[in-house]
Image (cartoon, rainbow, N blue to C red; front, side):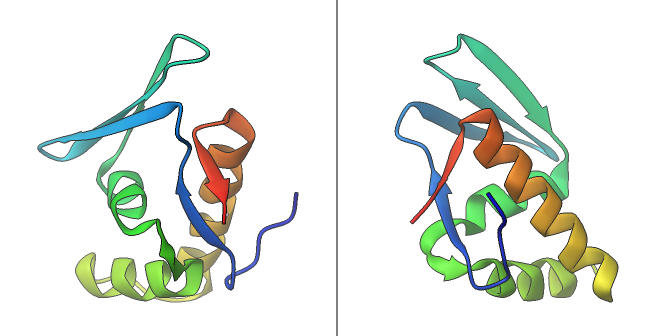
Length: 92
């Protein structure tokens, strides 16, 4: 599946997410797996509520992490696709 900046994501119902200081942990209950993500990845998961587009998430991450440019958007798209492929996020 190809995601775009207009795509809206949310956590999959069979996944749980929790932030611990600067990292986040996603528990994929159906696969009995846990994934650890860095601060920026955790922030994307917090922002991906089904109402915000990935473009909205990129703008927030750029602002909060004092980063910018096409690399941030590409990183968000790549990570979002990985989350969907892993079954812990879904397109809404």
